Length: 126
Image 1: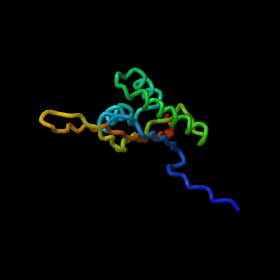
Image 2: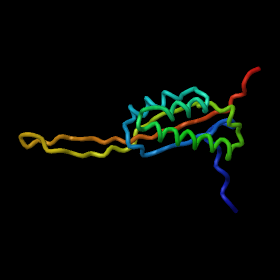
Image 3: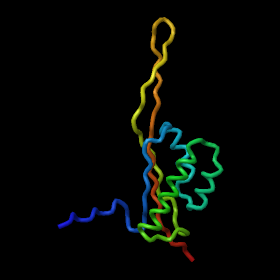
Image 4: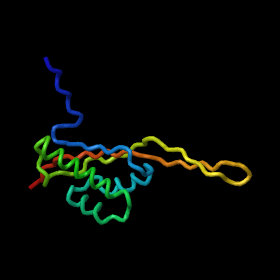
């Protein structure tokens, strides 16, 4: 008497990886996610490796995780993978402060974000 297997959240030719609690604003993370949308995974990894953005290293790790999920869990061919979706969401915000002039309080917000990457196997046309 075991529980039923959970249904897949993505299609049969897709795999997904999610990265939470990234210490950057969603706006900055979305700029890096936009670099890889729709590209083949080899090109996307090369772009992220040589990007000057600080968060691009974490995005590259998430993409590598999605590729590993596709290969090991879903038996997809790595050479035919394309970044189908890369989207960003908000997470928690740490509120900090700093004393300002005349007894006021300067509010400092430190946002966190989360990233979801889906890779899809696309057969090349002859």
